[in-house]
Amino acid sequence: MYGGIIAPPLIIGNAAGVSPAEIGLLVACCLFVGGLATILQTVGIPFFGAQLPLVQGTSFASVATMVAIVNGGGGIQAVFGAVLVAALIGFLIAPFFARIIRFFPPVVTGVVITMIGISLTPVAANWAMGGDAKADDYGSLSNIGLAAGTLLVVLLLSKVGNAAISRMSILLAIVLGTVAAALLGMADFSQVGNGAIFAFPQPLAFGMPVFEIGGIISMTIVVLVILTETTADILAVGEIAGSKIDSKRIANGLRADMASSAVAPIFNTFTQSAFAQNVGLVAITGITSRFVVAAGGGILVVLGLLPVLGRVVAAIPTPVLGGAGIVLFGTVAASGIRTLSKVKYDGMNLVIVAASIAFGCIPIVKTDFYAGFPTWFETIFHSGISSAAIMAVLLNLLFNEFTFGNTKNASVFSAAPPRMVKRDEICGLIEGDHFENGKLIDKEGYEIPVVSPDEFEKIQTGQIQMPLPKLNQPGLEH
Image 1 (cartoon, one colour):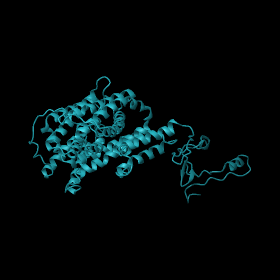
Image 2 (image 1 turned 180 degrees about the vertical axis):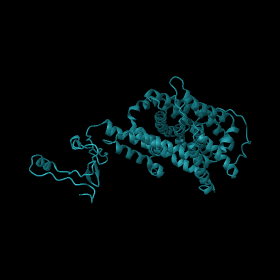
Image 3 (image 1 turned 135 degrees about the vertical axis):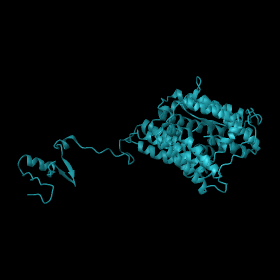
Image 4 (image 1 turned 90 degrees about the vertical axis):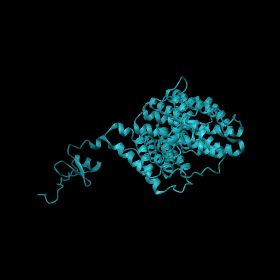
């Protein structure tokens, strides 16, 4: 998730036209605030923090809107102002979001968790290709081969009998992949020594925030999306970790999310949210301790204070992260499928799952699908996670909460009932009876005549004779 944290400041900084040194400051601030937000979310204080193994970081969902604010003439100060106000609004409405827990049964949470994994897959694929579409080697066999090698190492280390190595398979694969890349000349550590070794993030380094109504409205819509995604991540991690998730816990998590986002602009950074990437890591390692993730937050704080360490981590080749990301994000989808396996597919649950996943995949497979829609609509539904979550919640309300007019198994989408046999249809069978080539055979090999109810009655009353049994072995009739 390191790459996920540093991507937004790189994009926004370049869009705003700030200097490379200022972009470096943005990156350091994002790491610093992300680490503090992670500690708050995992360790928690009264009313703040879900106390789950959740990594917090700079939300990528807000990037497009922030670029639009910058391009609108407000500059990066307008971005900070919009984030500050929108986060405070999100903080006020967080308890409302917490009360929607009853509308997230397994048929909804399973869809959302599955879509988290599916929506992250293009990210892993982009990393595997090199990360920079303008680079000459983007999509080259060398990049994809490095990603494939990293993926292979993850799988092989997961196979070994040592539990500690299996749990560290992701980390070890990234280290080994980076070493291999360095030997092949695909990793560049030349810039690690350039720049300050220690630097504390300077508050309001870009000046006071600027408040523009248009930017605030747009960012508030983004905050609604972030609240939805963070709720989904809390539910996903709770499901994997086996922790009870109630409205109070969700409210505490969302308050920590929005409090961190409100403080972030003071330290020159942007909206914070729970990172979906971490869901996969929790699932694949089986390590569900929130204190382990809190220690990870401490590492992020150190990286934010020591830019030299951040430069070391930044030197990890993107294809290596892509190879690890494939299995991480696939594990998230698999966790969602596991949740969906608990769903009873009677009534309309099948169409809820089908329509929600398909709806969520639309912006993933066709990124410009909503280009002609109003900006606020595109902002919400451009996220496959948000699209699937909204559709699943609405369809669950329509079919499972408002049951008026429902008819069991009336829909063509309803799953067919399981095969059944009436008790009186098997009462005549004894041990050893079996079907062979469409015939009912007893344990001695003789065919048992199968008759209709009418024939059965006539045989019982002597009106017709019982057919003689035949040995089901040709040539042995004598």
